[in-house]
Image (cartoon, rainbow, N blue to C red; front, top):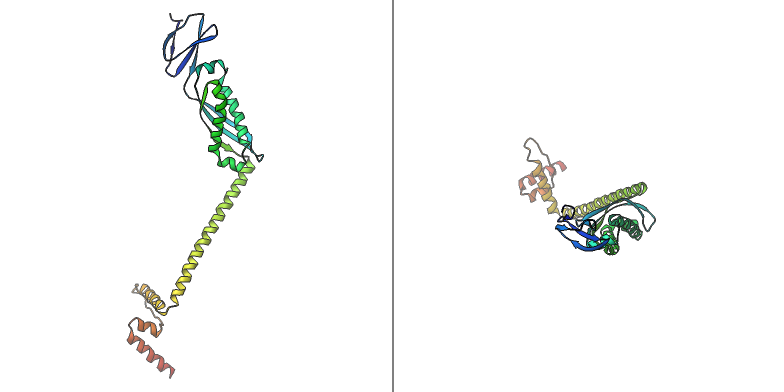
Length: 245
């Protein structure tokens, strides 16, 4: 009884083979087989990961890059995966390596760095074409990392630094242009006598807030009269006339 019974777990399917031929596919539960005649081969239906690190490839512009990729796959057809492929995990890994090299070779380095999502979709579709014949579904494929040669990394670092300096210079120049425009507008306004007088009086008011200061100003008579200091303006005029005589 013990040798004839077998259990299929929730995440499995099992093929019962009689004299080397699949006679049925069974799912979760308790099942029986004929001892010495029937064999049972189980297949795990959970998503499996094929990790491909350190793959080398050459771009369209002949630059060698290192690729880290990952492929997620699930068993779609139990009978096919048993009868059509011996070690499906190794087979998918080997074919994915070939697909990566072929796809990377279609891109220049700059396009490669900007098109990771597009490349991941192409990689999935390419592997899926063949794996479907083995009863395997490629759920997802993606590029985890793209590593560049040391000299290329230095070149990119220099380029990035130059771009940052260029942006800083442009931002500073734009700020100076705005400031000069405002200053020009202010100078134009100050050419108006009334505006200049108001500016002078505002400055006097700011400075006079500190009572410990004694302020002596030489102001034009027009400014004093505009401020309502007619008496001071008259005294100033008399003092000026006296000195002139």
